[in-house]
Length: 126
Image 1 (cartoon, one colour):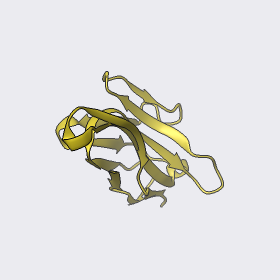
Image 2 (image 1 turned 90 degrees about the vertical axis):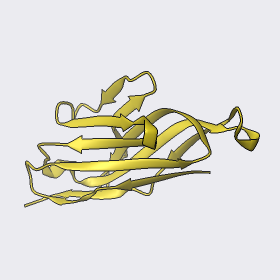
Image 3 (image 1 turned 180 degrees about the horizontal axis):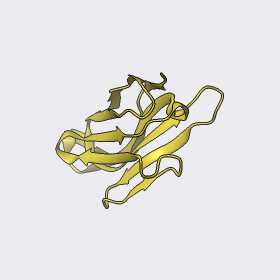
Image 4 (image 1 turned 45 degrees about the vertical axis):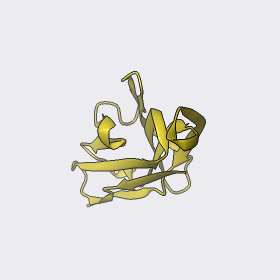
């Protein structure tokens, strides 16, 4: 019932920048968290950046100071600005959205949801 779509991945040289976008659509009443995660070949998925409804943001230690997560409430979108990219940032980047659906008939609050996108590939290489 909630569709999550990422975009913006691609090939970039070390030291370069890239911005990822993620939008959520569907019968959403409220979003209380949006986050970016990544998974490199042979490695576990790790949290990169997280935005909470309170406005609080958190970052993984490996990207702190280089990546910035931002939110567009009107568009149910979240962005990840990635600067000073390194080859070890190469991975598939996934967006996760959590919140509550709308209730029956679009009124009130429905059940909670936790949805993932299909991922977008980021490759950092010269």
